[in-house]
Image 1: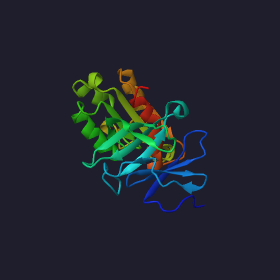
Image 2 (image 1 turned 45 degrees about the vertical axis):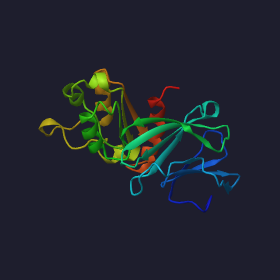
Image 3 (image 1 turned 90 degrees about the vertical axis):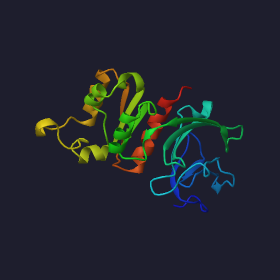
Image 4 (image 1 turned 180 degrees about the vertical axis):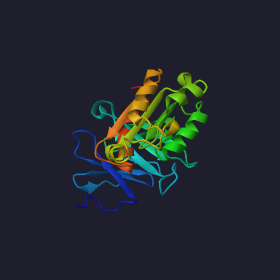
Length: 231
């Protein structure tokens, strides 16, 4: 059932809790609002001048803070003009249908729009840049990574690991290859628990009934984004 026309590359639709409006993400950089069945002319947020698009790049995710009704916080994920992945927190303006563009708080974030292998490889070499590591829909940080990467415990504030439930079920519990000597490798949940035991702030999340797909990543963003910013 169509909900709106006149959109450019719509990729995701969501709403804050108990809000009748629809917020539609355009990959080219705008968040549009459908209110009472009508697409509003003014975008809720326009980042089209700040992003690179398209393929797996662009404005890719939108998540509202659980307390959005009272604090007005929401989060977007996009690839900037240089191709780097960003998570940015904004606040709604006095006009409930328009965001406050000047309220942006930005994180350089290694994750989401790149594969787990690339995320791990980049993050472990650039901990001065990436203190928060998001391995979304595939990939892990191991106990060996923690113990062999200089200053890992000191520099890394969060490791967030997520999978789609079908991805875990269809790939031997999310295992990537084998362990030493050909022995079965621990599951992502087990590996994440191991690094927690090493003193790392690590979180594991499973997206219900999804596989290796954008919906898994967007749900993961919703879970991870509030952990990046202090209210």
